[in-house]
Amino acid sequence: MEYPDILHTLTKPDVESIPSETIVYKLDVDNNIVAVNRLWQSFALANNAPELAIDQVIGKPLMQYISGNITKHFWQTLLDKARLANTVLHLDYRCDSPDLRRFMRIKVYRGDGESLHFESALLRTESRPVSIHFKRAQQRGADAKVRCSFCNGILHKSHWVEAESLVTGQKSVTLDVIYGICPVCQSTLDSL
Image (cartoon, rainbow, N blue to C red; front, top):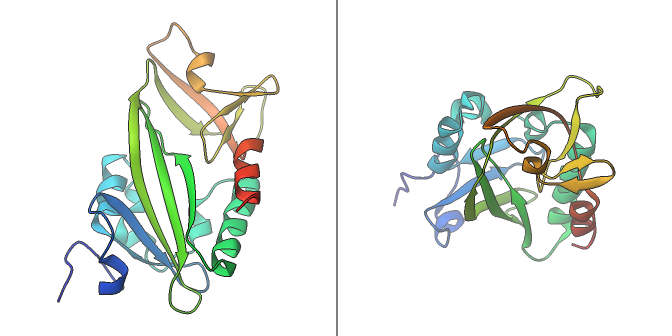
């Protein structure tokens, strides 16, 4: 039986219990993206990210799409833990758009051999009072803020805050950011 919502190499056992509104992708032993579902494509295009379209990501290393050495280290640690675990790992994270806070949960588990399966589900959304666009800074400058790649908190005066708290009274703003990991998200990963 063919599963038209799943592209490339995801097979029947991979998809039997996955809710239809879940973004699914699979990595091979070398952490290359080898399969995604149609919702991946829809999400990428709806969020103005054609560089994440299916034909752009299949066969490419996951780390190519992750910004910042600290964030790459975080993800590599997650991948290593998932390969060693005899269980499914769950992590909550945020995948915000300029106008929405998206609260998500990722489920990671080992497949055949050393492959890894990821299921990312939307838990809820909240409207932002201010439209906030994030622009990746080329280097850390006086105006660049550190943004946690997992919870989207912003480091401000040694505290992690919501971006909205930095831009009150405006309708739309662009913040220059570099990516890192806040202590809470790092502690969550360490405890897995």
